[in-house]
Length: 236
Ligand SMILES: Cc1cc2nc3c(=O)[nH]c(=O)nc-3n(C[C@H](O)[C@H](O)[C@H](O)COP(=O)(O)O)c2cc1C
Image (tube, rainbow, N blue to C red; front, side):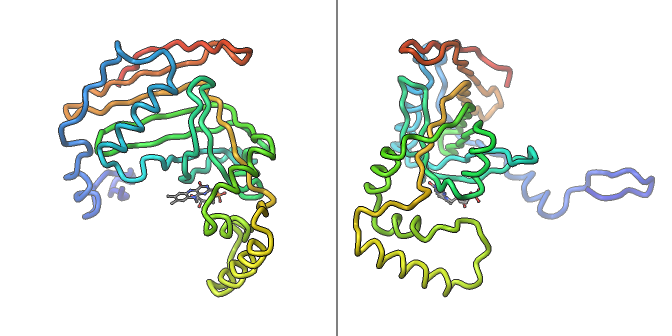
């Protein structure tokens, strides 16, 4: 974007803009999304697509973007690892520190979105809903099932605070390692499994000729055993 002589902004791509314009996404053969055959529950379709992404060789298909809002209503987003999906409950599980920016944002505003793009398949999934922390015993069990390296990293804590030097981190990691060696059952204080109960889930299948196919599920019933979903196609 540049300021024109007439005072209005004009769009004139830079060298980077030119480079990007010559790289249209999804310019390859992609799967066809047979929406008539889609299951009644979005969790089941998500698991199907996740397995297909793994089989197709998509790198890290379990990594999703978690979007939250801060106290001023300003959006924030970061990627994290999807821990599990409860298809029957329509719930997506992830783990994070309660005492991190995202943890504090979720405590203040327990609504979030998860989104993922699997490039090899030209597929996007968007999940929106309410988030709650799993009971502490569940978070502790999940923590103890992690690799020692991941547990040490969590025990270091202070996530997203300014760090004086990498040496300061190494020192803190060594201390955390000693604590873990002394007590292998130790759980990081703020380690939390979060459960996102989807209100809406959208499945997006890209098409090289831009006839993208979108299917959105909306939850119509909550809790007490019977969860119902409606689904609708969306204009691309
Ligand atoms: C591939 C990948 C996986 C990640 N997985 C997690 C995760 O499971 N949980 C987590 O808290 N942060 C994870 N992170 C780090 C987050 O992106 C982020 O940097 C960190 O959680 C701090 O976010 P916050 O300041 O918004 O709280 C991951 C980062 C990458 C690149």
